[in-house]
Amino acid sequence: MKILHLSTTDVKGGAGIAAYRLHKGLIDAGVISEIFVQRKYGAANDVFSSESIRGKSFDFFCAGADKIVSKVFGPKSEEITSPALFASMDLRIIDKMNPDIVHIHWICGGFLSPEKIAKIKKPIVWTMHDMWPFSGAKHYNSGDRSYINGDFSHNNVLDRWTWERKKRAWNGLTITGVSPSAWLEHEAKASYLFKEKTVDRIPNGINVDIFKKGDMLSCRKRFNLPLDKKLILFGAVDPLSGERKGYKLLLDVISELSRSDIGKNVALVIFGSNDDHRVNFGLPTYFTGKLSSEEDLAAIYSAADIFVAPSKEDNLPNTVIESMSCGTPVAAFHIGGMPDMIDDKINGIMVPPFENKTMAKEIISLLSNEDCHARLSDGARKKVLEKFDIRLIVKKYSQLYNSVLHP
Image (cartoon, rainbow, N blue to C red; front, side, top):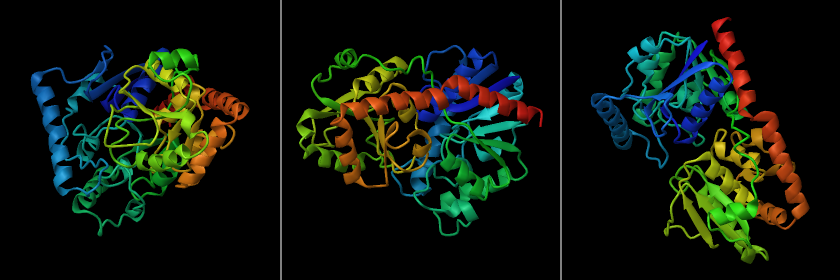
C-alpha cells in the first residue's frame, strides 16, 4: 500500500504540520508514504515539491493570484478565504508517483482547485482541517449556515461561485472524508456537498515521546522567562492576526485576571508572534517569536502553568493536544473540537462561549490550587496517551486506507 499526501505546506501551519506528522508516523509503521507540497519549509528529504525555477515561479504566481482575487472579490473578513481559482500542481506528478491512495489535506493557496481535484484518478481520502471542503470560499463560516442547504443566493459573489464550482466538481466524485473532530464531522455530514459522502472521524496525532513534560525551571531558563511567577501561555500561527484564535477575548480574560489578588504574580507568554506593541495585555508579556522545532514547543509548554486557547471557531488545534501531552492543562471555550480534547475539571478547563469572566475565574482558581493543578496535569497527559498518540492514529488511518482499497 502506497499513500501520497498532498498539502500546501509541510512543517508550517497547523494542517501542514498534522499532515507531515501523519506521513512520518506511517513510515515508522512500515507503510509506504510520500508527501508532495506546494511550499516546502522543512529540510526533510522525504518531502517533495517543485524543483524547477519554472515550477516554483508558477507556484508563486498561483498563490499570489489567489490572494488578490480573494482580497478584491471575496468576503470582507480578516480571516483567510480561498477561491482556489488557480492551481499550480501538475496532476502528472500523481501518475508518476503512482500511489494507491491520494490523501488530500489543506490544499488552498493556489495549490489545487476543485476542477483539478475532480480529475484525480486514484481513490481520494480527504482530511478536512477546516470547513472549506464543503463550504464556499470561507474556511470558517462565522455562523453562516449556507453550506447546509446550498442556498448561497445572499452570499458574497466569490463565496457563491466557489461553492457552485465545488458542487459541479464533487458531483459523482468518490471522496472519503476524514474529520479530526466530532463537530466538523457533524457539519460535514449535514452539508449539501458532503451529505452523500462517507465521513469518518480520526483526530490529529502527535509524537508523545517528544511532547512530554519537561523540568519547568530549566524550560523557563531556556526562554529567559521569570522563575517566580505563574505563567499563562498563548500561541498559534500568527496568534495576533485575525480574531478567530480569540486574542481579543483573551484581552478581556487577562484584564479580569490582572485585577485579582493573584494578578501581580502572573505573567503572559506568547509564541508564534514577535513583540507587538499594538496589543497591551495588562500583564508582563514575553514574546518568544515563532518556534520551529517540536523540542522548543515542548519546552515552552512545559515552562507554563496553563495554556489558554480562546478560539471563537476551531477544529482540533494541534496546540491544545501538544500542551496537554506536556502535562500543561488547557483552558478553552466550549466550541468546535475543544470538547474532543478537554474534559472540564478532569484534564483542563471548559467554559461556555464566550464567558470571559468565567474563564478568568476558573484560571485564577486553578493557579491558586496546586493539588488541582497536579490532578489536571496528570489527566491531560493521560488523555493524550489514550486518544492522540500518533501510533494510534496511524492504525486508524491504515484501517481506513484498507477499507477504501478493499470495500
